[in-house]
Structure formats: C-alpha cells, structure tokens
Amino acid sequence: MAKTEKRKKLSSNAKKALVLCCMVGLLVVTGVLNFVLNSQINDSTDVDGNGNNNGTAVETFFNSHRSNRETARAEEFSYLDAIIKSESASESVKASAEQKQVELLAFIEKELVLESIIKAKGFDDAVVTMSTNNLNVIVNKEELTSQDVAQIVGAMLKETNYARNQVYVMSYTA
Image 1 (spheres, rainbow, N blue to C red):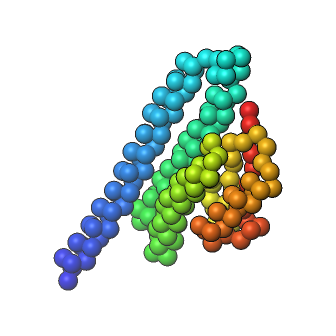
Image 2 (cartoon, rainbow, N blue to C red; image 1 turned 90 degrees about the horizontal axis):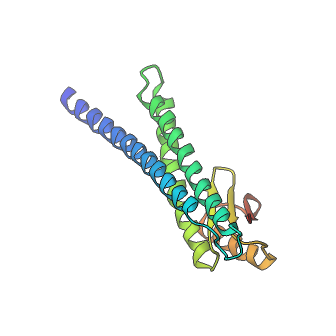
Image 3 (cartoon, helix red, strand yellow; image 1 turned 30 degrees about the vertical axis):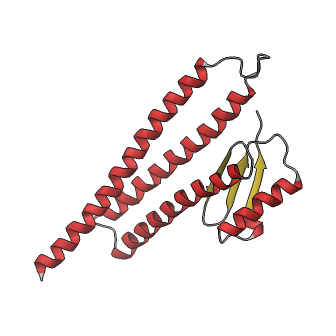
C-alpha cells in the first residue's frame, strides 16, 4: 500500500513540476517576445507617413499590457507553487492553492478566446483581463459607440458567466 501512495505522490509532484516548468518557460518566452517586439518597434519609423507614431504607441500599449499580465500571472503561479510545496502549509491551504492555479489557467485560456472574438468582430486589437469579480476589456478604437460597447458586452456575456455590471469596456488611443 505504501508503494501505491508513493507513486501517487510522485505523480502529483511530477504534475506540479511540469506546471512550474511550463510557467517558467512561458515567462522566458514572454521576455524574449517583449524584447524582440520592442526592438522591432524601435526600428520602425514614421508609421503613418506624417511623422506620427500613434500606431506604434498603440501596439506597444497592447503588447506591453499582455506582457505585464503574463508576468503577473507567472509570479502568482510561482507563489502558489511555493504554497503547494511548503511542508508547513495545511492540506486545505495546499488544495486551495491548487484550485487557484486551475482557476488562473481557465482565465488565461478564456482571455485568449475573448480577445480573438473581439478581433473577429472587426476591432484592430483588444486586451481582456479576467478576475473572479469582473472582466475588463480594452479595445483599440479611438471612440466606442454604444453599439460597439453593446456588441462587445454581448459577446462577453455569451462566452462567460459574468453579469452585465461586471463587464467593463474601454477604448484606448495614443
């Protein structure tokens, strides 16, 4: 019986190590992409032909926002992993940390889907950030009409379990 329990524990530890390695890998990829994208943006000049780099500023905002979101999530995963691996943490605390990791993974997947849906509706770019209490959407459009907001909110409500008063839509321009 002890051998079976040991196998389960090793299997559980292996899963945790795999999740941690994936998160560290994502963090490294995010850093490399951030560096590459920033160097490409710095190399480009005169986006609209008039000496204005507003397009670049907007791209930088959205890329930076995504990078910051991914970095924050990686740090949160690292913190939760430390709790799970802690010998002094109770089993209920460890289980709670594992549940939070699952919740964060679900948020990450859903954010990507929601961003794709917004882009499919004809918007240039969007960043979606989910939490347990609300869903924030920042759209690359100078001015959002009430029809734009209704379209975005409708899509968010259809794809998530948030209530209307939990969905916030904003425009971003440089």
